[in-house]
Length: 298
Image (tube, rainbow, N blue to C red):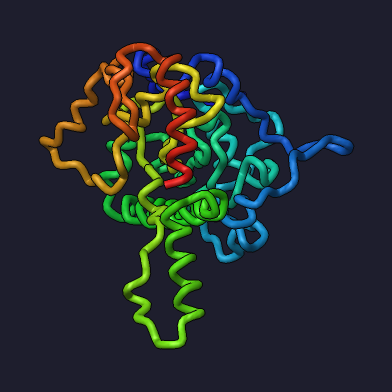
């Protein structure tokens, strides 16, 4: 059998391509004997999952999260359901960690250097539009807490990967060395702060999700990836098409509730320098390569 979307998204407002949607059809059966379960754990997986990924033993929601049969598939827009239904069947290169309430995965088509998805598992919420699901105050609080944790971990991973290239980090390191070498006692509060890597992380939900199951994006703000191949890819994260979960709950009159169409067709504006590239995606893409190098060295 196949899991089907209860509501069909508008293809004109999809932030991803039809190819990306169709390639999320994933059987949930575990790898058979002799099959490769996937790449070994990487450093980011280890950072996000310091202990072995195991479901909590004190769960009271076994019925909610019981694994599907091996015949179950999650087709197209419903593809993310495979991860929430049976996260243990995926390698750590895809599913970073999970518990009774959430699954954290690496996006199959990342649109930045780091791009994670937070997938809620509660069926009372996970098939709702995010604007509806995040009006529940208890559920919203749990999502916001998880997103904050993920933002912190992504920031730490950026520091690990790019800290040695950052001029602000070097300034602090040099000041610390001088302080340690000094004979007189120095005030540590006078040290340069170093780089605030938390400012380099963005997160939120799309006003028009392309996938059926609720998912929250948490990603580095560089917008640099081989999978960033279209205007709508970029604008889905560089415009108000992405709504921060900290903006919820939305009031009845909030402009974001209008789900305005057209965000994906807006001019392409560099997130870092503000240069407007109109509809010239290839030029923006080339420009972002240079911005990426400068961004790392800030």
